[in-house]
Amino acid sequence: MNPNWDKSNPPDPTPAQETLEAELSRKQFSYVGFVKTDGSGLPSNVVTNIVDFQTIFTESEAVGPLMEMGMFGGDANPLIANSGLMVNYRTMAILTKPNTATLSIIFRITC
Image (cartoon, rainbow, N blue to C red):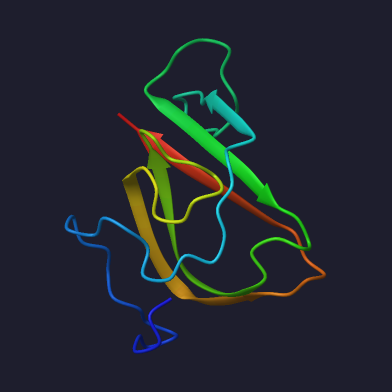
């Protein structure tokens, strides 16, 4: 999170963004699966053009103010900030995750 950002209206992502402004936490995906194309959002047991990538941050993980998130591939390492190639980036109004909450993140990619 960039401290100069408007906490309720951060800037939109740009194609030039290659790293997070201030990486707080990083974790591998715990689930990757295809999604039905009928608009239901349900898992598919056949290959489709929609894929969900999910991870869950437990109570002790990613604690603090969150305003951005990224999806990394290539030589990304879950233990090394700014490693790998950022393939997706999103900003959002501030969400402060307390150490009493879990947070599930799903990146849904449509090709």
